[in-house]
Length: 639
Image (cartoon, rainbow, N blue to C red; front, side):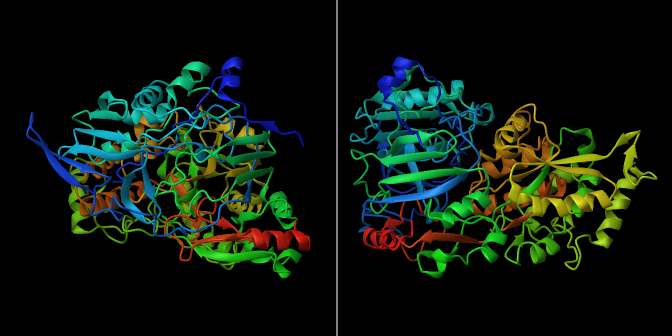
């Protein structure tokens, strides 16, 4: 296998390769408690907070004198390799554009000014800074940057790099991101070499502003100017970063290896103690999960996060498990429940009819699928904030009604939204693939919408056949999708499943999008902020990697503003429940299933902290390598 080593910045400059990474990250949004010392600026008499972190809700979990995070092993040994798998292909290392297919793992190359932890859902902490300063009004924030941060080529990270990165993102970043944050700032000012000031526009949502500024990536102004790289173009090399790892080598569409930067500036940072424990992280590429599973059994890679209920229930009785070489475990996952669903392309006129969407949704029999296909391992998705306090449940509370009432009064929402229970998928019988009761309801809905079944059983309206293509790229999804397709055919829909290769799949999701239905994951955050607009905002509907359904809804837009402007945790919770209720009533999705555990299998050369933190598995970071056990496995022929 021929491997392509990572080229140096100088080599990139000589070849004039262009590119950069996609601002695909959601805004950390509102993730940050007002904690720290205060002072008064004499010239304005403003009370200024100086702190090591920020939170909109309550106290920060960690103080300024933190030695290490609570959930890591501070004495974890360093060294060894962890290897995982990735599906499909890749042709770019730029994750900040939708051009090309991104190579796995690139986020580990970059760092931002503030960081969150896996055990504090509302806090954000100075990482590339020592402290931050801000007034009670949150009209601005100053970050006092660390003076020891360097890029992987040894050059220093300064305030000029922060200013440059912000301008670069606003000029070349993803349109869907820029559309929702373009009015946040009035100025970004370099105060001195290690001090940078963000001044926020009067209309910028105050719960989001510090998080927005703090997620600014550490990009090197000098490197971009030398190489001519752009955020909006694909590239076969990563951008220069400050992270713990650098690209070591790659074999296109087969393998990517990241190596620990032995001169990494952050090795002794309190937030990094017990983290970034592996010398190398290797990604092996496979066309599908089945091929990857066979490779795992043969020891071609060493850690597998299982996403197939079939494999989990029936596949983990192979020699390496029986001989004790491979551990198979279910580990707790306290993160937001995955909002995985089939979604409609609302740009298609036939899917703009809610009754049509409801009828199609009724044909997915989760109960039968879970019992027959998933071995009872999953739960049905009901909410975009599944299994959290933000999920709408039952009839609206008085507080929710207060939020929703104005939209009922002006005719934008039906009065029933105030009295009905939150929409949940109608249950189906588990004894057969097609629930006949739901079939009858769906048939009535389609007939009422004008889609009449002919003598051939196919439904037509104004001479047009009611057709539906389910676009997929994974062979492993066939056994799940095909029963759904058969149910849709029984309803009189000309339904097909079209499995294409991954590159074609990605291409068909680019604007103008070309699909009827796909599987999408719309999972949201514990503290929803402006980033929601990338998922549900009208301004992102025409070209977005998140609002793929093309949702344009004025009430949803308005309710997101209510959520974003909420000043307390209680206000935010109630407003999000109301938003969740309205989103679910739109029926632009057919909820699938989620799992509240991590299904993991790994060769018995890794260890992890017990207990794990609630919001991260951390296998690539705070797990570690047991060199003695690895030597025993190698001697036994495990690899």
